[in-house]
Length: 553
RNA sequence: GGCUCGUUGGUCAAGUGGUUAAGACGUCGCCCUCUCACGGCGAAGACAGGGGUUCGACUCCCCUACGAGCUACCA
Image (tube, rainbow, N blue to C red):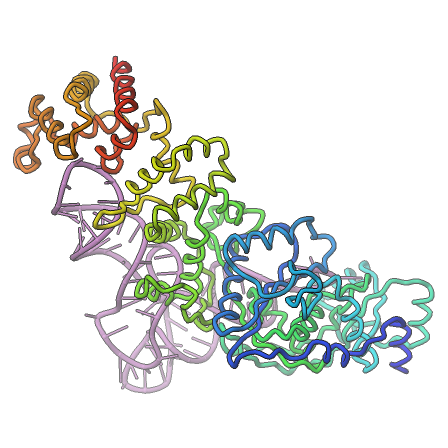
């Protein structure tokens, strides 16, 4: 068989050789320990927490030592393509402050496009150049088997309990003569290009995975598809060529790829490429109510883990990042606690520290981190964050909430405990924040907690409160009046006295405060009531209380 | 079915042959306190099971169970 003749028959239009591309995309000149990583999503239009999780790992590995992190779009599967997906990916990652150095999203002529194009569909002539050279060397061949034929073979293999796939005696197109091939092609028969695998089933490959350590796998023996019948490469072929030509040094990818590592190993070998380092990550998992076990995050089943969800509810991107970092590198949390003022990008991130098994997404933990991180921000920063969120998600309400900046800042200061010895930690995410403070902006809010005293007592206390109330009172004068009311109606004003003999009282000052608190805010738990009253003003307070009194039967 | 990876408290996890088996979240209790939040103190709670190897196994080996992934002209 004349391989050169075959190569020319298959790829008559290919002019460039692999050497041409090797020269065009030279090794990168980078600092010593710098790594080149990439995020290579397929544009399916959906991006969830797990994607962010691995993107963050890639980004950290590249940037911790002055390397390069780029975005490549793996759009080889026509069926799964979704319009606008690329924009979504870029926007979401930008929102979460994960910056790319090059790749999709930059202009074609921009210097950040030097190793492009970064859309695989725009790279077919490159793939074909390498494919042609494989054919020339007898390492690839066209296969004319139809899907039906392949299915039939697979069924037979399954029935015979043999290894399924296109290999050995099942690789019927492997030894077609030039004449047969030419005839098929002239007849217009569609074909795929397959690798002529050199693998030996008895041998195994050994390679070092940065996360899992030494891995032993049998050599690949399958004549896998390199080019699909439309001439577009499969993942495997594109991966080898792209990551080589884009000079990727570390491939961080999901553990589902581990099993196909032998294919990649053979491909890199046969193409004469140096293997990158691999790091196969464990997936973020979710507790599955149905089965009662862990499972991989799924697009269809877990819409609440979509990144859009976190944007909608207003989770601060920084908090998300801190959370993911604590999952990614277990020593991060300790480091962050030890150096609270250091930029989290200074953390010495390492792939080796990444978990071997999939972590369950933990909302409690996320919330705890949100509370802590938000409590480190200034009221101005929180104001800006909430403002941006509200404008995008609650434009109508935003007009009300942000009509008076000073008022909003006062509320934030109160809820954040700014100026106090210790900061409060009530805030988790924007939506929740507004649920906490909305009563400031309504004349009569819905009562969310019930009075524990009967309505006669409530009425009496509230009337008394209104009578004694003086807006000029400071916090302690104001509180003394609550005590006065307590004493007058058989409640203890002194907590110690109450604790000593609770049976002597109807209750204590806290019960009086609670009545007023519920009347004013609609709920039993709030920060300092005096401050609340002074932010909302005497009029609003009186109106609310009178409204409550009137509502008591 | 075959191949592969994994398995420490409810969750995330430290741990690399000798430890009272860290820490964080959550839960519960106490303290502080006008409620809440914050903060402080404390409690409960784990090496999947069985065999080896060894003076000694959470740590090394084998088997079983369970979980996950792959087994496409999808990535």
